[in-house]
Amino acid sequence: MIKLYTSSAELVDFAAEKYGDRTAFSDTYGSISFKELQKSARTLASSLMRAVTTGKTLPVMVYMPKSINSIVTFMGSMYAGSPYVPMDYAVPMARFKATAQNLCPAAVITDRDGKAKLTDAGVDVPILIYDELVSGNIDDDKINAVLNTATDLDPAYIMYTSGSTGTPKGVTISHRAVLDYTKWLTDTFDINSESIIGMQSAFHFDNSVFDMFAALYTGCKTVIIPEVLFMYPEKLFDFLSEENISIIFWVPTVMISVANSGILSEKHLKTLKLILFAGEVMPIKQLNQWIDAYPDCTFVNMYGPTEATDIVLYYIVDRSYSAGETLPIGIPCANMKALILDEDGKECKKGEQGELYIGGSGIASGYWNSPEITKKAFVQNPLNKMYCDRLYRTGDLVYEASDGNIMFVGRADSQIKLRGNRIELGDIEAATAAIDGIDNCCAMFSQETEEIYLFLETQAEIVQRKFNMELKKTLPSYMIPQKIVSMAKFPHTPSGKIDRQALKKQYITERTN
Image 1: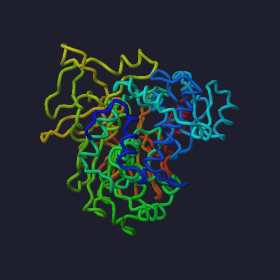
Image 2: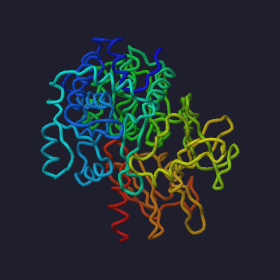
Image 3: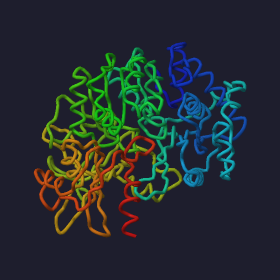
Image 4: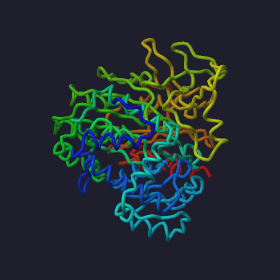
């Protein structure tokens, strides 16, 4: 790519000119070419600018089912100079209102069913209907005027995350962050116009950034996988095979579920070449099952909080790992940096554990309309006093291995002290995941009762005394959980991760209040 773009929307124009009638995206209802995407997005942008005032301080909420129409709306919002804000179509109205109150958006774009729900809930935001916006005329002069005055530091999207407090926080990501990330990832893994991506992520989860913008940058095709298929692994693999999927970027929980189903030994995807995963710790047991099934695929463990443009660190998995080993989270992507600092803000030596701080073009501008929270999370680099050098405090504990790869230890808030012993809950999870019959697991700590809770996803009948004996083979006695809760299926967040807050509310908070 020769031109240095300033707005992510310009990638739509680039793709339309270079890839034209090639299919860009497909979903359950059909497909759209790059030219058709450009036309629909520019039409929507023109209608949007006629209906409301837009701009970089006036975001557009997108409240629609996961579909091509959502992608058109994202691109149209950016054409109009406004950052897009993807909202979960199943979000509780109380959370929607809290988000809108913080956001102060120009409008919310939805379908007719969505408008009815928002109206009934009394949402006080201009509500626009997608079908009406894409049926108007294009005002290219107005759109081009917006693009000509845009800067690469303007916000491209805002993604809301609750964090540990439950209060929505709008992570604000710039166009430069999106453009740099897309170029790095597609160049590094040789993604091209012949690639076909199988999209698992929800749009309000930042893995979706890759799924969308990789298509625009390279001319590849992104297939939106029907969400219901992830409940039926055999049908899922039939779909992936029919669509000739060559790249997947999934959360580990989904990969774990697929591995546990046994489908990896029953069906083989001949076109699959690149397997990316991020969002949670990937258990070694299920990773090895994937590697055994697809020895010729490239596997990449990727790390990045929402407060960055999806990914900050990556590690290309070059072998199978044995139980008890830790999978590295790797080295920084292009234009990103990672510092490991101790409690005094001094850089840790190799092998020393500290908190991970990240910086570079990919980190967020901050939290939307929340300067005080931003000030606490995004700080000046303590190793550089000469100029503004912002870092994001991840709250993750890591160390640098002798080979230069960064190793994830756990969350700073998941490291507990119990009866004088310092315990990392991730160690308990790793030991548990290695036990036969355990499909998934997570460990939590109750401050009120000073008890470790271990949640197990399993079809087996669990006897706590016998299970603890298994854990004692690899864990000291002081790390053995006091409470074990087993179930056939964990609750999941809309992005596919384990819903730890739901487990905590049901099994810990309610029992200790």
